[in-house]
Length: 82
Image 1 (cartoon, helix red, strand yellow):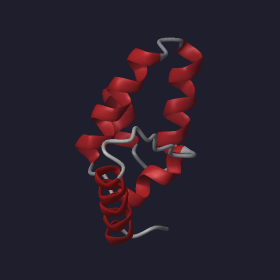
Image 2 (tube, one colour):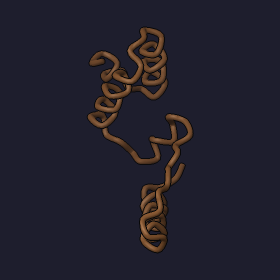
Image 3 (tube, helix red, strand yellow):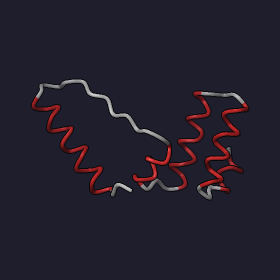
């Protein structure tokens, strides 16, 4: 797992590169939901992320996938709140 210090260093390097290139547009891609856990989010942040992502796909099938993901990572209390 990537440490929060490593992520901070990566973002600082990107920020420096953007400044050098005069504001060049870049994109950051996160591959897979588990990559987000490297940022060590709190339960409130996970809850807010779940609420937001459910606005992007309102289908029952997606909600079941999200709940399964949360269950896998022991966020059972959040499952009750979404």
